Length: 423
Image 1: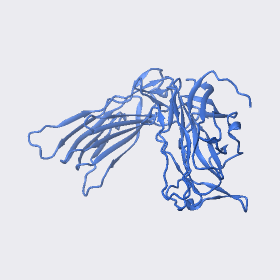
Image 2 (image 1 turned 90 degrees about the vertical axis):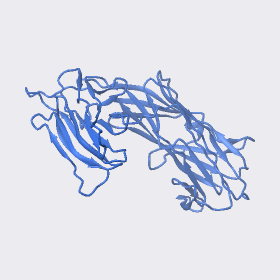
Image 3 (image 1 turned 60 degrees about the vertical axis):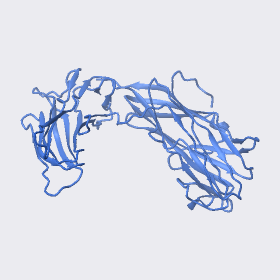
Image 4 (image 1 turned 30 degrees about the vertical axis):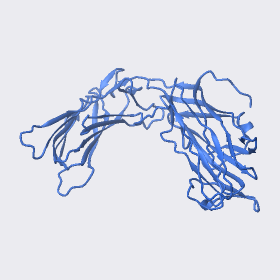
């Protein structure tokens, strides 16, 4: 297929396939992770190598995945390596790959913000609840501007507020009050409380809502043992104004809450006063375009092969998924470069084949040269992710003991996109 030149490079990755072929006389299945399929020559059928009698694999951990914001350029690199041992060697071994990455860990989900007091006693976590309507763009937390981005006005938007109290002392804590007030555009839909452990005859305190306007809550009079935590979670939604029009009805910055407050004291502390901690004021910017981000996640950035007997084998190397936030649709082109058969220092080769199948099954097997001329189009949206799986097949014969290696690069390129428009 002829190559097209894309104007915008989003993300480049080097797909890491660390394959350690260990030929040994002792049968062991201690490595095994994932299904390895072997071609049974007598029947011509592919069968799973149960127990790792012929071969097994160990997938390298993917950590938090590989993430890129639009306009940024991150890369990961690595080398595919195969190591052999002579059949007379008893001990097995594996080469360890160090995967260097410049990706930024996203930490909390992008629809969530969290404040924790410096002493760790009081925390407030706020999560924007996704819309049921696929035509609406979900809210995200803009960490740079410190507000939630809501593209749509006059829309029922919902948040989940969780207030957590932790007794990290060695004394019994008495919580006098946890409270907060909310903007006049919001109503409390539901609430619940929970404790990390159950203590006999422990009071769960009293929860009082502003029943006239649902503008706030107060949770009072409960105790926490050392190490115990308690939470109250409330779901809030935009209400209608007195004239019957759905809030928020103007494009501007609104305040969701007044910060949240915790008041508490400890048992058996004569002369000590009461303590108070303040949370955080959370805001939402209505008609604000949320930050655009495109992320690429892989289930495993590499595979360690352990081959005990010559044969024809295949395995799923990884699953990859493209996720989109802040746009309705994007198209990402996936291209492959530099893939070859694995080669040793003395120029011997091990044939390798690849397949871009689905999550469950490989498709048509192709040689590395054909893979290098393949373009895979992925269409993702804020509602539907786009995914593919790479399968790998190796044919081990009578190659001599040695190290065989090759490096390939997988490039993800933004082709076009459709911006979500605020009504």
